[in-house]
Length: 102
Image 1: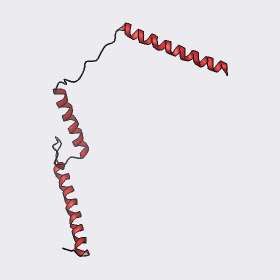
Image 2: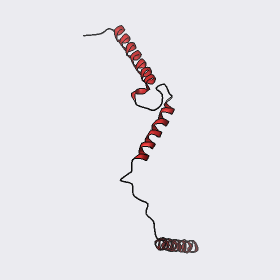
Image 3: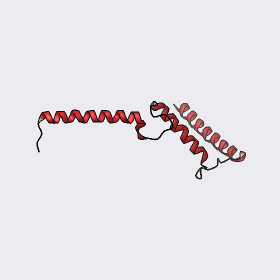
Image 4: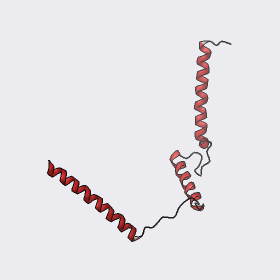
């Protein structure tokens, strides 16, 4: 079946109107996504409500994958610091030698 240019323009106009009304309906009904905010509430309030709900549910569930923070002994930390100081001393010595050689 072939359509005339006028029929195609009218169909395009109707399609645009349908899309506009669907967007308006989604805005009125809250986009179909459940939220604690009122259906007519602005999107920012809805996002904030979702974040609060997510925080509450995350606080209630104990995380099995979360590892306890590891503590380093004072001796281990001292060893790391000493090694880093040694590396920096070698680096400074190398830079001094290069600057004196120029």
